[in-house]
Amino acid sequence: LVILKNLAGGGTLNIVNSEVENALKNLGYDEGKIRDITDYITEEIEEGLARGTVIGAPHLNPDHYKIFDTAAGNYAGEGSIPIGGHVKMMAAAQPFVSGGISKTNNLPEHASVKDIDDAFLNGYDLGLKGITVFRTNSKPISAMGFGEKGFAELGRGEKEDLPFNGVSFRHEVKINGIPYLINIGEYEDGRPGDVVINSYSAGSDIGELLRTSGIAASKALKRGVPLEVAVGPWIGPKGNLGGFVTIDTNEEVKSHPHIKQVNSPLDFAGRLMLLNYLGQTDLATKDVEVKIEDLRGFKNGAFRTYERMNINPWNVDHVLADPELGGFESMEDINEGLPKVNKEEIKDNKNNNTRGISCDKCGHMMRQTAPGCFDCTNCHEKIGGCGM
Image: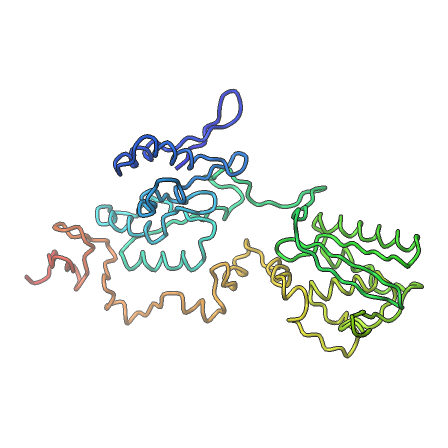
């Protein structure tokens, strides 16, 4: 819907496709409403990136949204033509084309393996001779784009800041009677992004060590360093401040539910984070039963986030085995999703028209009923040596 024009003096300009205004006029919208709708479409939601859809536009009847659907929609795939629509358009033209149709079916990034699998099966049923698909951002370089910044990765020296008003995991304990406060800031997906360790009774030198250790780990986490690398070295070394870990409540003093004894405050902080965010239950005190559903990562989604990070969306084996990327649960499911070809059943194929013969009378694909004989299932016209 939006054309990005590069200006000679520098910069860019978002221009609405002229057919949008023509369509709105034909639908009965006046000039003022048309101007508001087109302004809505070209509005930049971030620098250099237009909204690119009519969905939610002022004055526009929701029943008219689909009139303005395009091949790939906007940057988020909103307002895109479903793959089934592409296939049906090609099927309407196929009877009039002797070969395959040279058309790329552009799909939004969220299109799944199953969407494409269904498209090929549907195309086969409709008599298409070929289908070409392209999913947005399925390659690092695309012929089409929306101006968005795709494939964001942290480069050398770059960092991922925490939300301004985010969530934290607060833990107040005593180690050998000395109080410590550990506050872990979290990203929206549950990952820890910084850690602050305070003690008001451990002495100025120890307090400074804890503070600087937390700052170093926080900087590492914000720059993409794995959690086990950032805080793993804290675990193990013995210090003078180790001992039993307790929690004070209004009624009693009780042991920490998972970590009973540590070598130092940093030893406790490292165990706490790796246990709660990565589910490393071996770091809990021996013989202590740890219920996964009680851990922070289970409650805030960090477990799922780290699990998804192990899946490579560019690896076809990972995609096919992952239902969330549109894949299948198992190889059995993959096989079930594939068309079954049986030589004995070829004769029963509803078209069995390997030559692509179409009906001269109505244009539908014809069914081959015998060698050199073709029958139209729509108007029942026959051609060839059918013994008429």
